[in-house]
Length: 226
Image 1 (cartoon, rainbow, N blue to C red):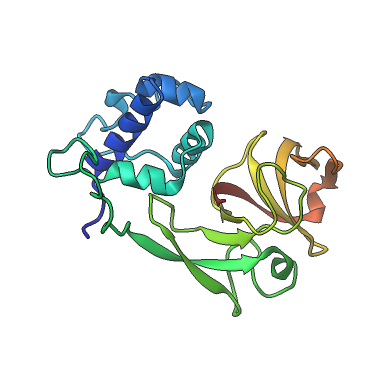
Image 2: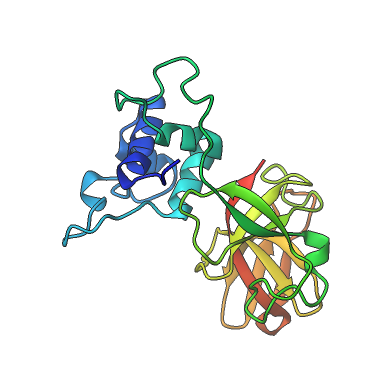
């Protein structure tokens, strides 16, 4: 199976918009993105180089529409007519391209030796899992959720893909490790030069506030397997 092409990925976004009776602009707005994010003019740079949708935009579109990664990948693969899967069973033998990503349980993540100072995988003891390769960046890994503080967004046992290299801003879902070794999935509510305030999706769990010096690293959640 050859890698997915630029045209196939953008066509999948167009098809997903059509499924929900939306234009690409309407789909972008529903996902909380700038309305021009998926415009035709944004798909190529001024010098003709192909531009690809970001992992973050794909994740937000899936969340907004309820589409799974498998749904999105299936829309990327054209049939022989170039119109999507119009024939019964057309996807039966399709195996989407995958990549192996380092995987660690959240409880393990709190112990020493698994991360470097910036929150990237280090040392031994990591498992690996295969995930669909849909434009994920190079600096990503997977963690398995423990507990219920992020219900209903993430359940105990769900797997999230995170990137310490991604920039974070208010409202992002993040994984934070403290210098005391606590690792938690939270929502970034506010950050200043001195403090970081984190919220839980589950109202039964109180918000947390830390001095910046208490934080070892923070990584943005890009995608969740549920």
